[in-house]
Image (cartoon, rainbow over all chains, first blue to last red; front, side):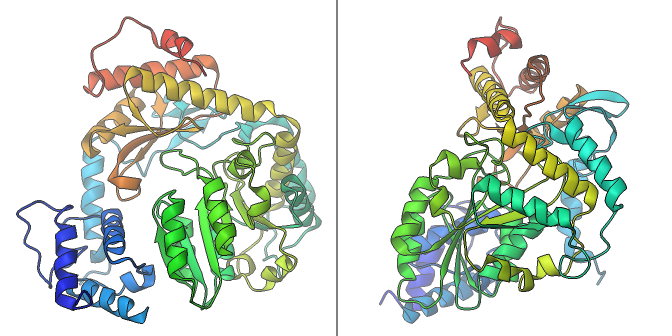
Length: 83
Length: 413
């Protein structure tokens, strides 16, 4: 069940909650770098939280293809299935 | 859409910065007086942000070597190393660097940036994996972009995190190449090379260490944090620069790898750019000779760094994790950093303003670098100004009765 993209997305949004103001609305379509006021270093730090939670490494070139929370969740699902 | 509209955010950020006083990207020294002083805005200014760690930019022997080299060899080589740009002195300098590190071979590059760009992007091929410290310099990140390998960041200076990421790769094809730095440029903290080298050994990976800020400033013989940590035999490649401790420009990589010279015909940032001009090769060769024969240069820069760091910490500044030639002051926020930096310049001290996203942990920093050439009086003077600006801006608490010289004297080096 943990491979289900919706549960991955819920985990990602929960992690993001530690880095953005409490009243920030985050959905599948939220752009990680563009919509949340995070600078590039903060985005990469958030990705490290995600990597720890899901016990995987997301290569930088894979991250370059990801813009939204939904895309990140799909990337995590793909990487988990590839193992 | 305007061609440069993609930089609108940058333009706005720059305008906001400049509105706080000066544009930090457009500081113009009218005259360089010595390794530690310049003229800025018509006034003398102490240099505490130039990475001139050993103060060799005005060393008599380096200048004499540079002058005789330019007279003998001309102003430029007009070609790349693989065409007409290899002179006997380039090869001699490579031999000297290899000897200095006790390694089989060295390659020199036209800048330190290109040394990382060239070495890392060439070593890491399509099936390989690059594991880089999260706080790596831009040249390492850019090298990763140029490489065909998969790129994975590990948590800053965290050997356990590195090991975890290497374990995830254990069933994958390809080489694992770890990249880290001896001293990290923003906070001045040292790599935990003993732990990282141990993980490297255990996991059968390759290790590259960039000693840009630690050549000459660390190690009994100036061979950096690798020497200090006793891991030189574990490190497969050391990368470095001529632009800091050696007072010129250029970069290098050294290794014991038997086929190392093969990189000369595979490494594009080495092959497709003009080689270093004779004047630079001459001064760098002389500077290397200076640091090989005068251990007091390294001792002095360490003493000066330690003195500034401990005195600032004792006064209540939030500083980096350890004393080194880089001394970083953590500012409460970006606005405070901009004000602090401008007030330092008003009073004749140049340091670096370092702001997110160029800094780890989104910190706003005043980044100072000390030199072996700084006198005690210059350090006390800079210290006095930093403390007085810290009080003026409310970053430090109320004034103590001590003078900065007394603060410095009371603090063990």
